[in-house]
Image (cartoon, rainbow, N blue to C red; front, side, top):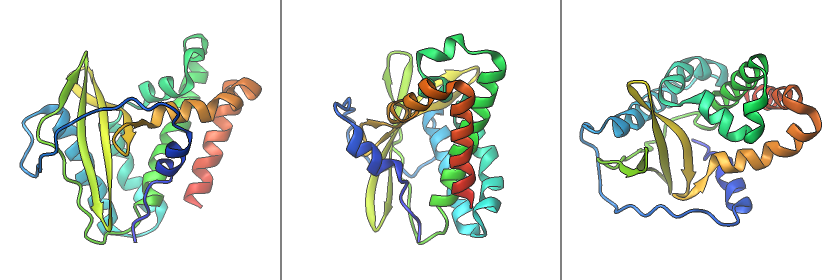
Length: 205
């Protein structure tokens, strides 16, 4: 049975003042003309295919990695999760942290979405603009229903995900920044990269 992503429960406990994102509910299964919506739908198609394929977490990791790297702006997400310290890091430290964050992100999806039991991922047909960003509303429907709202920005010619608002309004990147802060302060970027890689290793077993 598919596991629900553990960060949802963690974020619900840690979020002190989540920023609300109000979107009107509309069913959407048609092909998206909105490029931000199409990006989210493409990711869900790859995730569903991985779930249906079964196999091990490591085999799903290999299937999901290209799709996640296409849909998510992982360097930008790493910078957000690290916080203001990012600007002063060396290129080598930025690369090490981005590589580790990528491994952790892909391994989390590969582990938690491990099989298919009829789950659906309906996506709203139109994004909502907030400044230079777009927000796309979606749900995981399967046993329980969970809301995942995606924040995207334009990276070159594509719209890419920079944050996931768990249960609709709880920033995963804000939770990650809070989670990473102590390790970054005590161990620096090398210590944080080591810790993130350890999480990915443990997730993959």
